[in-house]
Length: 220
Figure 1 (cartoon, rainbow, N blue to C red):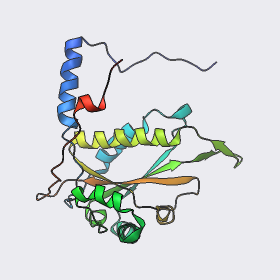
Figure 2 (spheres, rainbow, N blue to C red):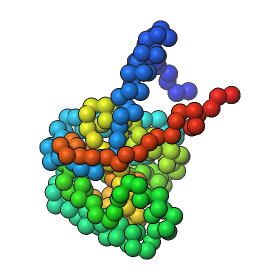
Figure 3 (tube, helix red, strand yellow):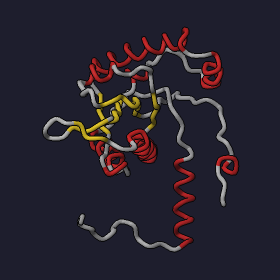
Figure 4 (cartoon, rainbow, N blue to C red):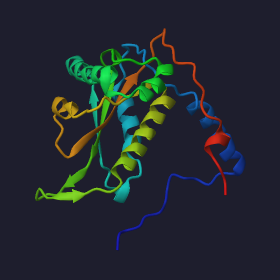
């Protein structure tokens, strides 16, 4: 039987304290916006490591933790990633994407040019381990990989926002070029590129609205 240990780190709180903390967190996190205009101001490794530790603590199927995070700060590597990503994006915008998809993207004013991949001080490239490897080289099945990596990514984005950093999720398709550039093994599939940094002083964001809460929630 597996060893069990006492639960720690979740103190009992009054309903009033719970509500106050929930409202405070709501007011902070709901101000998060995707940013495309980044400053070149560096992000300290200690800050990134603390945020990545949060992501790495996420729940996962059978506790297999099927993720790998590659922090990219080298300008040469960032340039290679940008060139490869933009090649895929040009193919997307010039014919690969259906008109319906392009119409959905139109309010966000995106295009095939991705300068933020070079200008932002840091990229976190997130890989999903499609299967594990045993000591003898045999494959070990992983469970709920997409869900697990998605949860870890969401926790990372939220944590970065709360410490005061801006982010952008980028998913050029296909993304296998990231395995070659970053020397990642075949059992890891690129999940997304998370652009991280301080927003530029002149940064702007699209004027969009979120769906009201009562439209996306229900009770039974």
